[in-house]
View 1 (tube, rainbow, N blue to C red):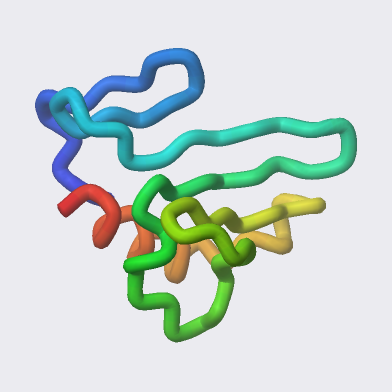
View 2 (view 1 turned 90 degrees about the vertical axis):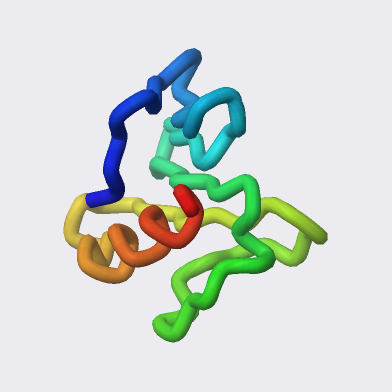
Length: 80
């Protein structure tokens, strides 16, 4: 996991210092893990969805849907 000293979670948003890194959104049928700089992250497993200029997300319908190793790699990148 990324070094989280000085990081905090506020209203579901993970902040690195004052900069937003990611957030989680829980809907009625899934959980989305969103990355504010998702469009610029290397995503070799092609987990990130969306076509916005900035934000991308991973949508998980069941806990088993999430590739934890790939998610951690994206989270580390986003925290840099």
